[in-house]
Image 1 (cartoon, rainbow, N blue to C red):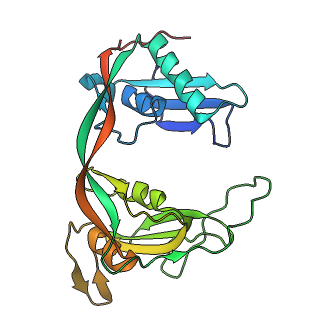
Image 2: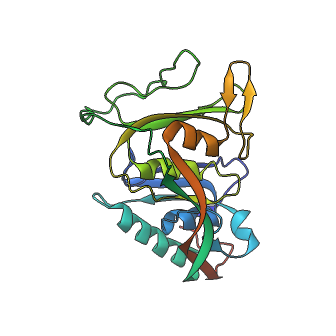
Length: 252
C-alpha cells in the first residue's frame, strides 16, 4: 500500500467472487472506499464518520488473497490491513436514518414471476458487448439471469431484469434516489421476477407527457409499471466512526 502517484487511475479489481479471487487491487482509492469494502457497508456516505481527508487523500493497494477465502474473511483481512497500515482505530454506533420502503401497492404487484432458472454457464469466455434492443438499450442474453440498466437518449432510463429477487430491485433503486436514501425491501415477495422499468431521471415525483407517451418519475414508474410503492420510513444502520487514522500509511 502506498500513496497514489499523479498517473494513478481510479480502479478496483479482484477479490472473492470476482474473476480474480487471488488478488485484490484498488488504485486511486480514498480511505472511505477501503472502509466501505472492509466493513461491507450499505451506504457509502452516511455509514462512515471521520475527518475530511478520508475523501481526498488517495492510495494504491495490491493484496494477495489465499485460495478459498470467503467474502467475510476478505473483509476481516482488509480491516486488519487498514489497522496496521493506517494505525486505524474505529468504533461502531447504531444510528437511525431516513429510508424509502419498497412495499406492494394497493392493487397488488404487476411482476411476472420467473420460470425455470437459467442453466449454469460453462467455462468463462471473453466478455462480449451487450446485445441491444431496437431502442439501443442493453438486453439480457437468453438463459441468463441479471439486471441491466442504461440511460439515454437524454434522461430516459430503462432497466431490464430476469430472475431477480426484490432485494436486487431495492439495491438498484437505492442508487437512484436523489436524496441519497436507501431503499429497503418490505414487499414480502420471496420469488424471482422478470420486469422492465422505464422512468425519467430528471423528474422528482411527478409525471409529464410527451408526444410518444408519458415519461414517469421513478416513484410513479415503480407504482404504475411494477405495482409497488416507495414510501418514506426510517431504519437503523451500523456507523463506523474513525477515532484515529494516519494520513501516510506504512508502505510494503
